[in-house]
Image (cartoon, rainbow, N blue to C red; front, side):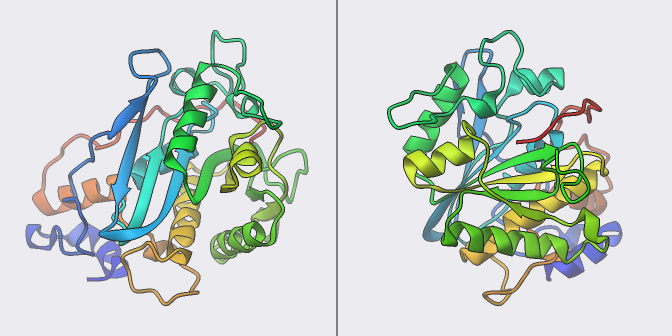
Length: 305
């Protein structure tokens, strides 16, 4: 059964259908356990998850929750940890800045270098500023990803308000980076009818950001994916899902059989933790608690990046 058909039948699933959608590595109601934690035992402790395909391939690192009031990125990354891939490896840090997420604040509380996305090496020989940035930078160096995606949110649509980077993909100027970024914006824009709400391509990411430093210092293809916070949460999370899925498809990492070079639609996005849980509930008739308990949406405004 295709993902498209599975989603159409969600309200009518019976137990016999559970587990038959795309031969996922996890049962629909299963949640992967953390592979480990960064800064375990401290107030900065944050889990990471490693998802391996059945064969070798690229490594993609996905980061969410750098700013604690940009909840869509954290929720999308948390959901992606249940994706099943054909090849390569996903390394996912869904809730990077746990203290800021707990406060619903852009800035980390009770620390000198409070804006995490300004604390990464700006020049050769620089060290990251602060314990969390140092640990995250060490994780990137150890992982050696081929691509790094950092999921963020802006306060307004960039096409309507140039002070915001909402609804944009930020990349460091290079032909390879621009090609990949253009594919992501083309996929997500195909479903957006209002032109002034479509995604823009912007460059470069802000100085001191994880994405910019990863490219400049480590040579990692890196992008910041920005949704727009004034939209409904499910829309923003879905846009993050689609852009990440498009990248993985272009790298040949997804299980489905969409032709190479095709732009994906939301129906092509792999089943995540939340959807697996809903399918399991529909099939079993249980009212189990949601699989992913993340903080409620916070109305605090922020600028993105």
